[in-house]
Image 1 (tube, rainbow, N blue to C red):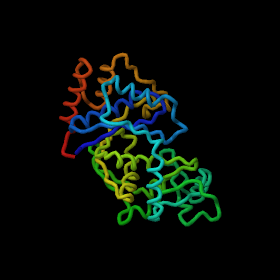
Image 2: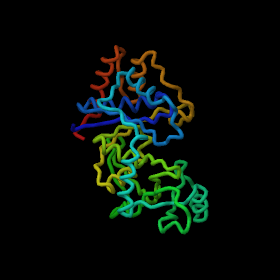
Image 3: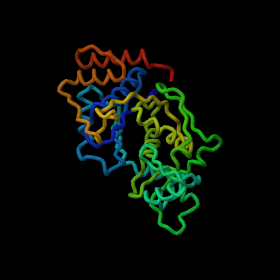
Image 4: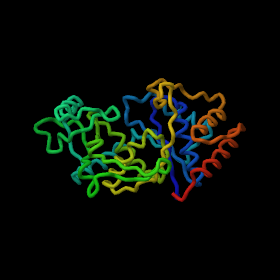
Length: 296
């Protein structure tokens, strides 16, 4: 296939209005390019996963007429692949063990006068780059200063947001690949899975755009292809923040799937007339193709 896209929800609860927008956008882009659309359950953060949420999500997608074109992949069953990728990075000197707790990182940043969190996360100061100094390893981190190689800033072009750039080493720091609890981190898992599934185009919410530079560095380090990216508008809650389960987003009301699809399409600047479900999706696909289809 020249186009393979995906929707990759975390099973932390049923889909809500914001997650349906992401699902619909990725499905529309795949259909507009006569491609395949896959679904992947991203459950590496197992503490946040809710039992039974994954089948509920798949049922919700089906009620909206969004059916995957292949087997649903579940990340928690793929640890061997992630370990293989981590081993490759270790062999290249691009991954190292880290003994730091969050408190250690906060203290080191405060001592250096750089204790302001970025998006709620502390920028890792590279404490364990030179070794553990007698402490026990807790996590594994990616060596961003070496991965950047000849150019500090990582550049890419988002199909909706335009040219993007980020100095990952300076703005993010050496990020975690395997957590202190032994589970693999999202950044590594998503890169490995996108490559393993042959994903050529990633369409996802704008809140995930900030992850892209980190994922591109990992793709380059592992000699994996970089997909094309399109980040969609977000659905905002009453407080002006991204609608999410954490800020009280309600599960989708699918008594009328056509209406749910219409509302999601409106967020994507697509006005779809009320009709039966298959016709609604057909029209939405035509409108998406007219707006976003390209030779990407």
